[in-house]
Image 1 (cartoon, rainbow, N blue to C red):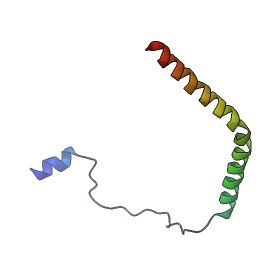
Image 2 (image 1 turned 180 degrees about the vertical axis):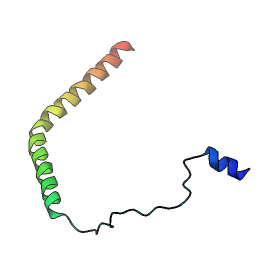
Image 3 (image 1 turned 45 degrees about the horizontal axis):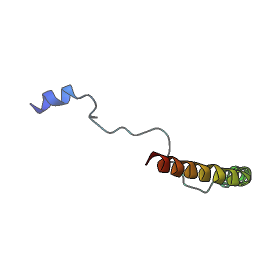
Image 4 (image 1 turned 135 degrees about the vertical axis):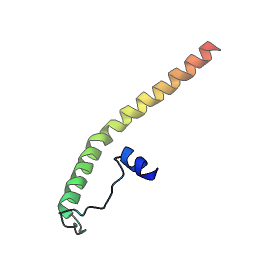
Amino acid sequence: MSESIERQDPSVPRKVLRTVTPRSKARPDAEVDSIGRAIFLGLVILLIPLLPFVGIVWGLSKVLDFLARQRGE
């Protein structure tokens, strides 16, 4: 009975295969880190001037939502 189950389920591997590629050695990647930091700083520089506008839109939406609830009651 177990043989028939193994034949029906092809997703179960019969033996473990080794890969051809060698294992990669973990090492710090300073180049990619510096690119990531530069992108992050660029986004921060772009988004900080927009924060007051985001706050104004958020505040207006809260006030309008409050007024709509007061009107509906």
